[in-house]
Image 1: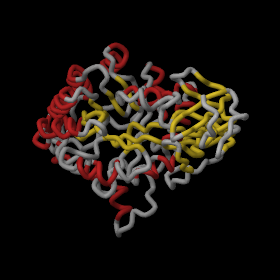
Image 2 (image 1 turned 180 degrees about the vertical axis):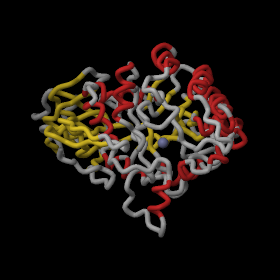
Image 3 (image 1 turned 90 degrees about the horizontal axis):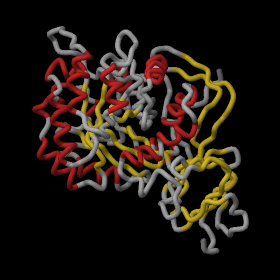
Image 4 (image 1 turned 180 degrees about the horizontal axis):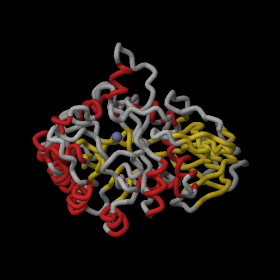
Length: 423
Ligand SMILES: [Zn+2]
């Protein structure tokens, strides 16, 4: 360590870095936008700027594996990237299936490049991308997929494309079976990246009135998946998810997660249910990553504007009123008994590995870009709720304070950070 002054020293915080195996009081020094020192004390070291992080958690910059930030192109669905990202304490966002082969240029130019947050994407399997939150099922059948075109665009944009998004759910199954998943897997295999699969009903079933059998969906789905693929929404209350109508985790999925190398992302959204979460965790389904899945239908967008917007939002199957964001999702896992270091890994080390970017992000290693999240871990009695009407009292509450993205500070002032609710 040279004695040249640090740009910033964050001092006296409780630093948790699962990859480095650190959980304790450390100071962290930043120079040239990079992490230059992690020491028990940098008190003697000169610095242009010192930030007191007493009573704060200092963790690797948080990575939200399930964002929807293709603003203006995905209708009311896409949120402003930095409100979900750096202004919510989150340094890296993965847009989950917003941009497609036809719209990827706009995603790069108008979302990824101008955002202060690091914005990456799982490219949509579908030609149209994640338009309007998939309100129109007819656009999402096999005829709406072009493997060759999507593969080519993904390969040309591998700096941003980190996987492929598709849906396995009973509404689509009732129309087309799981053909779309097979096509999505062809794309993912061709580009050697994970396929991220939405599980849990999204569309109404087709007009025949036949309700497909979720077991049949799982039996068809699992053999199509490869190790390292991701199943999303383990805690959903919607039918056709991890937890069956009788309250058990589908054994086929348990086997896939425990023995076939299939990963699980929380993909919180409005369909998160404490009951389903408890059942899935008790059965041994431990999420690997912790995507928040915030979008224009499940959070309250202050400037939605336009007559009838609220009605359009309320009619969406993913409309919800229970307030959430990434740190609320983390708080819920703490409440459900998952240790803090493991919850931190779900938003740092694990997603960095999933992205094949663990040589750049996800830990506070010397020389890495200084992506650092600073959180408040408040204690007391806080009310948490889900959209089934369940209300629980948590004795802890995580809230973002600020973050550094490549050494630049952003305060957590986003309108999407829910207020603490006293129980
Ligand atoms: Zn989503």
